[in-house]
Image 1 (spheres, rainbow, N blue to C red):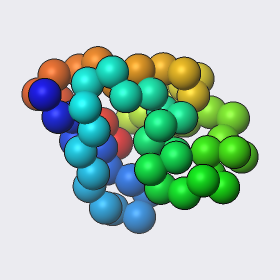
Image 2 (tube, helix red, strand yellow):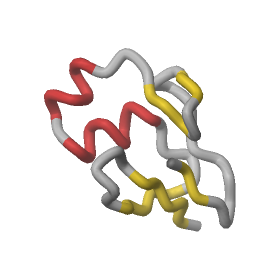
Image 3 (cartoon, rainbow, N blue to C red):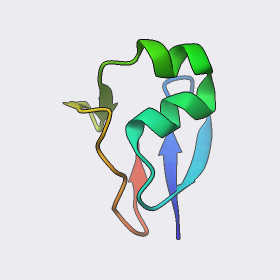
Length: 60
């Protein structure tokens, strides 16, 4: 099932459940994946290895 993610520029992308923050970064650009040291979900810093797990919810 797809999980919706709102990026800082307001774009909304969908990812499969279990996608890591690092994979989200890579889908934006190879350089971002290389340089990413953390992600941010709903204002909270998270590890790039965190997997998106919520079903039917929206991450920002």
